[in-house]
Length: 201
Length: 201
Image 1 (cartoon, chains in turn orange, red):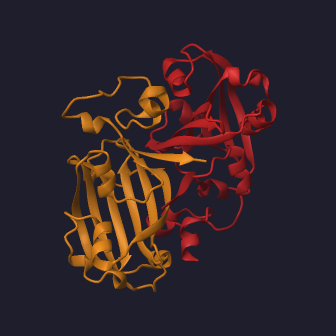
Image 2 (cartoon, rainbow over the protein chains, first blue to last red):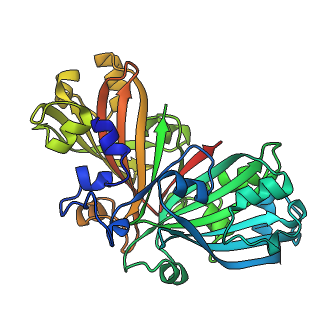
């Protein structure tokens, strides 16, 4: 079906089909193939990175860059409705898909909601799974903003990005199913490897 | 409410609140103000550019760049499920918000669905309004992809973009409420002026 072909098939970006001239991405193959397609994420369901990657047959991995406590700066305190200076757990992770750097995520959670989270091994487990199984926190909804942006130097380096490739910058505020503000995340995805899908009505 | 403040208030981009250091966008004022804030679009409702801008108190305007007929290239024929070479109406518009260039949109519709559309004045009317009132076409749903990208030279020039500012590139396939494939649109929004919002569950 053309519709599915155009907008659903993550193996070939729509842009290569209908907009840009130039060589077409290979439809099968090995090696550089992962780097040449874009990974499409369905937008409206609240899923973890781990679930997203597994759903499309890619092997997710995380490298934890930081996992520490910090006093909430004013902006994060406002976002999470905690007192300025309240303890937050900060988890910064490099996200990989089939071994290739795809995104950087910085998650911030009120420590009072998840004491001890700083010491949990998150390179092997989904944060959302840990929240559910260890803290009984089930996520209910999130508000997300999306913008196109230039990466900063650290992002470009960690994501091993070529020059002049932009990023998709996502900010997400996630609530538990009881409405508690649980997590504020800033994520940066390689623009040349990542694509969002959304259905509108 | 912090949540609303952070993710809802289009007068200050979230990125300036919680991520980047630097001068804060002014909260009131004239002149350059429009150019310094980002315009946030709620994602999940299918609205026209005209409706979007009006909903947030901005004056929408369009400059029609092309409005012509062309034989459907293979990719657009596949997208719209018409025969290759079938007549399409193509409408390319520069979109402005309060007089500032914000986006370029190229819409493609099967001419058989909307004969005479080539000659309708679309600088003053919403395409979606014309489809409804003149052709009885009510739009039902759309599938959209979103990616971050570098603008090409023509886009940068028409949108009057500074160097090294990326764009949000949106592709949208829109169906009528009876499931007919009505429109395939490629849109390019200035990354420094535009932001999408989405709610996840």
